[in-house]
Length: 280
Image 1 (tube, helix red, strand yellow):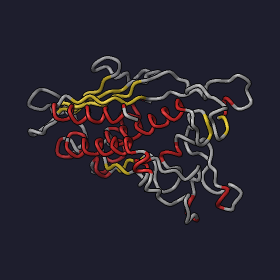
Image 2: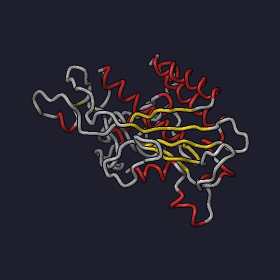
Image 3: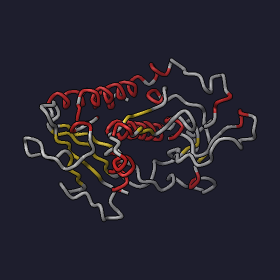
Image 4: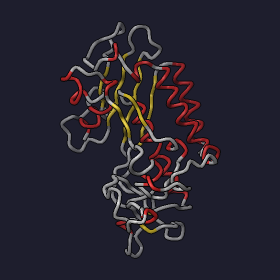
């Protein structure tokens, strides 16, 4: 698990390097025009394509999604907070990865297709962009804006040394282009099948502003938030369905993504980002 995550964060050298390609040849994405939007990825376990007129048979069934304890919209604040947290987790992992990031327009403001993962035939509110979302979810929009600005302004997050794959090269301050960590520095736990924590530091080159930057994935409890039938406007998810007194969602490991940048300017930027997060 940890090794696979590291390979993608580092630009997928196992796929591209042997053929002479570079990290820029890797296009990274969590969602695309086919399938769930990012909001729906954390809101629905199952596709809801009945409006397409094919009795919900069209569209893929394997969405690799989790509804965080309730199928569809909810006014449960705990579930909503978890969903937004998951969206931010996906955003940070995407923007911290080497390669070209791609996301679907509207993911930055939680655009929904109401669980429809094959909306090609819908010329209506299912597929339209509701511009009111930019105001309703302005804090999340600001999170994305600052995250994109961080990636743009700090070369080490995008391309590294001459745009090449990481090779262990040392900069003038004795820092490698990348160093991997787990719960201890320089011990990423590659051989530990239970490892669920990964961090890295990046050494800046050629006088770039980021002397050292890092991102981390850290584990949290493996169960989702308490589920309340009174708040869920859809239906309870699998583990809760029809089980009296059930209060937990399906067993999941939920990563919380943290950022730690040593450059003073980026620290200031991320302080602003954190302020935006706290206002959600």
